[in-house]
Length: 382
Image (cartoon, rainbow, N blue to C red; front, top):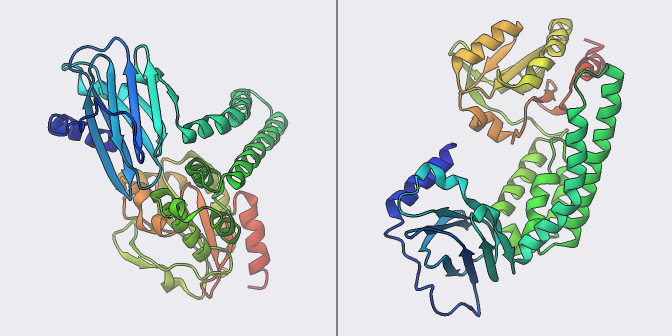
């Protein structure tokens, strides 16, 4: 169980009696707002429905006693949101099982009906335009995703040449998914589902922030001001600050020996700023290429600063020793919340930036032999 789920269940166990559903038995229509009517068969006495969603960066939790298999939620949203209904089956239903029976959907100000014959996780939904939109695009994307999974399952025991062919085929399907998503996004500028797809598909590791900003601005103001919209806006803003040609964002962090380190102290050198972690298999597989580049260029005004997204100093230090990584290592041991990683909006590792002696980013995400090739070009005269 993750930390968020633990807090959620604890909250519900303490307050579900105190938070009542606001007379949800009579009128089932709103001139404004949403109405969620639920009908779940075969539920014991004492069952409860818990609705959770987000509004203006606040988590909303509402509960309703289920009577004769039915429950109703009525309220008004300021903006669309991801939502979840979780069921407690009877008064003695163990809390650790609550997370098992939940239904995820998109919530907007509309009349929604949710029904099932047993568990809400098996429910069908009617009346939600956003959920219907989500099911529609998912129906287009799922066959492509299934093909990718099938191809990935065929990778074992294949030769290098066969794997290259499979990788190329997978890339075709990945590109097809991006095209389907992009078309949907452009055709639905007033849809929260399109906004969620924008966040998922339009901001890859090397996205162009200028292009992303142009497409993002096609959404209406209400959507841009949702928590999801604000996440996208922040990613675009960081992308503009960390794109090639921009000055690298300075930072302070503690090195692996407990000493303070500041990136700008390396001004005058070419620096590879490398985000990695001991638990990251692709990072560890990439390290031999980085080691080769380091030893080839370390006497030519070149340095590497590795920012670890580890949470354990022991695991971090062990990986550095095992892989033989002789450069500068820093971390605040906050995992994905590493302050430097957050500052650069690092969403996956390995991620790297090549910085010139003036502190300007000149390349990003150099993998394999491309790192040595790039350094050969910029350091040939050193």
